[in-house]
Amino acid sequence: MNSIQTPLGHEPISTSHWSRTAPAAPPCPALEGTIAVDCTIIGAGYSGLIMALELAAAGRSVVVLDAEAPGWAASGRNAGHVAPLFWGAKKTPRQIVAAYGDDMGARMNRMVADSGRWLFDLIDRHGIACDARRGYLYLARTEASLAKHRETFEEWSEFGGVFEAIDCTELARHVTSPNYAGGVWLPNGGLVNPLALSRGLAAAAVREGVQVFGNSRAVSAVKDGEVWRIQTTQGAVRSRTLLVAAGGYADALFPVLRKAAYTVHCGVIATDPLPDKGTSTLPGRVPVADLDDKAVFSPAIDAEGCLAISFLIGPGDLEMRKALKICAPRIAKAFPQLSPPEFKRIWAGKFTITPDGAPRLLRLADNAFAATGCNGLGHTLGISAARELAKLALGVGKDAINFRVEDAKPLPASSAANWLLRHVAFPLVNRAG
Ligand SMILES: Cc1cc2nc3c(=O)[nH]c(=O)nc-3n(C[C@H](O)[C@H](O)[C@H](O)COP(=O)(O)OP(=O)(O)OC[C@H]3O[C@@H](n4cnc5c(N)ncnc54)[C@H](O)[C@@H]3O)c2cc1C
Image: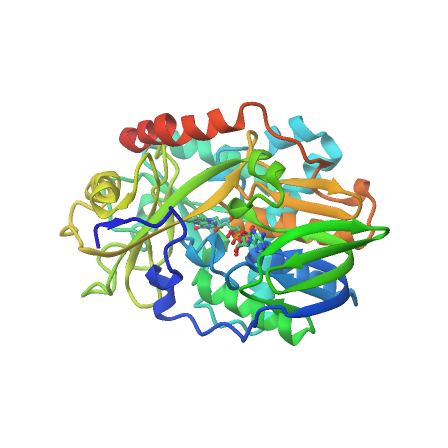
């Protein structure tokens, strides 16, 4: 498979490597007729499904609508890494406190530091079979880089983050590479099969009484007195509260959401199971990320022994040739002993980022809210934002919400910024390595 002609991130979900082993989704028929509930959620990715679980646990009746199916978008297509930090570990807890103030900054940091543990506990609690594996390793190429990043991780400890610096002897147990001087171990990070997680969350939501509808694109949302009427292609929902969890897939229904954050196109390539199941490269099968890469280099070996690597997509179609141009030099440098593996699958998805790397909770109208800006960390930042949006929907005051709540408005020059990211910034950082 060389070139995919469908719009990026809209390839059939069966293209994704994760669909090989993910269990089927629970039956999610299209909505027909009109139903009334306390809350309607648009989007059945991690964000929408976590909001649904939180609201159902608080006794609310909930409908989740998805234009396609649970996990069809970024939540089922991502690389599966669970990293409880801000974007690429590059935003430090102190910077968050400086930007958001002592109180909110500290609450944000504590929530994010705890977000990996929270997710793994949720997976256990609901018995979700998604090949969840705990333990994550950030890698530094030089002693100087290791020392610098150790300082950042020490800041995280002040907010409950659990991290352990490891030297190159310890590192050798996990990574066979001459390219790294040491690393930082995150016991509460890890790896999941994201499509299995998405479908498992949908199944858990259904068990908790949530009504999840697939093939049900919301096409209008109109306020009738105190009640929202959300029209889908074949039915309608009436509810007092409306939550939008459309991620990078927001459509014309809420145009402001397409401009309230920037959109990133991201791809993943994966091999078939490697002959040695990856043990000569990542002997501990722990997912890793290179702290010194200017773009993204985060290889992982999945439960079947396949190597999967994500990359930022520049201009043009999704093509294996272009993906290899970005990923192959990184693999060769990090693992010179590895004969170049053959990548068999390629797929893509979209997510949103914000200028400061922190998620946003947005007020769209009375009793209508959205979360955006998972910043490439849907399992941790994105799910944390979804939990907080659910609290907002339950009537918790803004002061007790762990992320800033603001009126939805477009970012300045968002279209130009999206173009610059994809056509200038990503090609540059992809080349820099
Ligand atoms: C290639 C890639 C790799 C990534 N790697 C990682 C990683 O390793 N670790 C990590 O933590 N994060 C990663 N991410 C980010 C993560 O996947 C996202 O942050 C997360 O999945 C976003 O979840 P979401 O629920 O907000 O949105 P999505 O999962 O994108 O779901 C949005 C849903 O809204 C639905 N929708 C939109 N409009 C409507 C409408 N009008 N009516 C009904 N439904 C609608 C869509 O059909 C879609 O299902 C990656 C993302 C990509 C694309």
